[in-house]
Image (cartoon, rainbow, N blue to C red; front, side):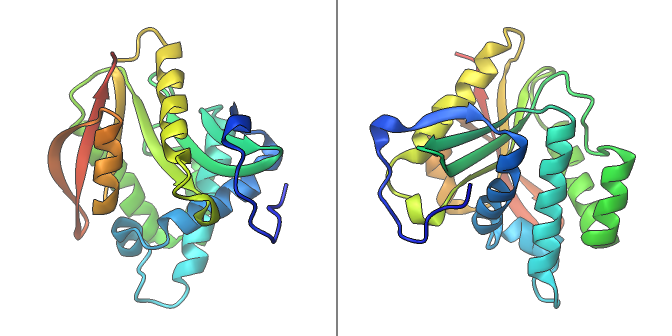
Length: 214
């Protein structure tokens, strides 16, 4: 479902949050690529200063979404009459979907993102999980709003949808997220995420946040 070339303001009364279907993954990957292109962590992991950064980042996001799909992890989209405007991807509390992923995911990641990028992604997730003060929780891995549709309040609608996914699981203690873009801290604070600690992964220091189940 490609977005129209002409940017049409979303009808906020018509926005629906639904789980992504297989045919949505290509557009979802494009939205997330734009959301994370300038993220310091991804720039570090996929070596922004070396040729091919964009290709490595695109490939990594594509393989991540494919792995989420195969593992049936919750991927939420905000739609306005068929237009996918925003995306969020979570890892559920009981998912056998840890940092190592599947062998075929790791193989594809090694071939597309390279050994360094694959190892950095795995190490980052392991370190983040070690510092979450809960045993059973959701982890927000990706969140992004298409750049043409930002500043309409879609992020807050998406945040509510994420919270609803967590609350559907009565045993989940909350949602964790690792934030590496300073401008996003206030967004998560507005969503009742509390700052846990600054956490260094690779050459980047981000902030680990957690939203307790209300």
